[in-house]
Length: 266
Length: 301
Image (tube, rainbow over all chains, first blue to last red):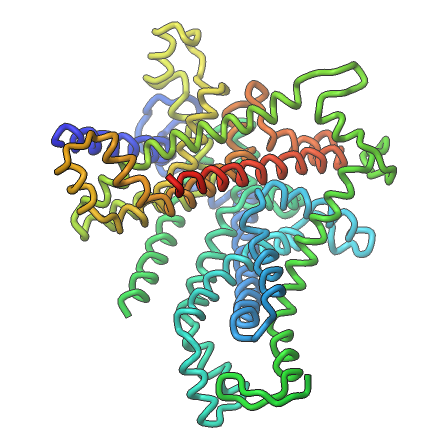
């Protein structure tokens, strides 16, 4: 048994090295004082300073944030309403099956197929309105489409876990529909809504494929910028940018972890 | 419809209740129908259309795109596309398999840690899970660069010529894929392993069963729910992945994801791209079906 324990520990540390070595290398070479090659030439923060003078990168950062914030807000509203609509009404069983199937589509379909379908659909919509030219508007629509499903699933599981008793009690005490919604259901649901919104936000920041297919020349996001850059040549500036994105991810993960653990202990 | 009913403490007609329900349901459902159900149906239609001289869609029903996918072109039959399709399935299987094999020891390792450090270790797996895939993929450029010991070792072993990087290559694609999807297996699997009933393992040990039999009979059945989620979470996106093969495989190791991306990008042949997407979809559904069927047999055992 001791032998197995040792083997398990060695494999575990090996896997951690496997997951983190590339990321650590990116951070390491982001402070290396040379433009070309991977020889260590001393510590510098020049690449980080250069980032903040690069108009294109600043614009890409702004696009990324606008995309994530707008799509998250819309997806959270749509998803919350959809979760309530699916869970709190006596729909016939067959209809529930169909609704469930549609809801799970964005989750089970490979994202490249969703992206392809959106490209074709936007192609047709473009003949109706020039609003659907490749760009930020299309990207927001694409992101909302997969975010809605995830928000709905998270909020619905919260709806199921809080049960209907409190709402029924409120009705017995003559609560109106709007009072019930705003003062009872939504406050009780809030942890689920926030968790769903955080998930949607992270999914949007993390997405590459949907953005790549629906983006226009004016709507480059940070992942798209990094992808285009590393296909040409890898520079320390890209390492610096990636390190910042990585740090933002770590902060988000810690935020989500703390939030969910606080909710669980409550 | 106009009959009065009591629905969780409220007295109202059924018509009224359904109306209110539809109000909640319709915005989200309409969104999903307009932007995923209809586009999906259009994609199916387009896969039977043709391509005009300027990359526009020509509405003439034909099976040409599917014939092309099966390898029948103007210059006779080639296996190129079929090889790419099969290779995608193969890469997804290998990626999932290795990720599962590596995940078990890691999950046991984390599960045995005291509670305080356990969450730290789990967070260490969650961070790569959420890190953008472009960054995680290109970061291998650095590790596999000719200046670093790994490429030097490979050159010394005469696997590559000196001064060359270890990418683009099939090896780099596998590295990138496994590291990309490892957290996708670890996280669901861990939720099962955390709840493992160790008394069963002890009972098996008391009865002198070998380590392999302990794993197959006492551990595997208990972890099957988490393992299934992990396998599906890995296998489906792995088959459609195009960032990893694009950056780490280049033209040397194309997967179906790259093929689709090409049709919607440089080649501008949406109809053929739609047909390849359908191929990928069928492969995905077929493997999920096979997996479910096999799992049922496993439950019977």
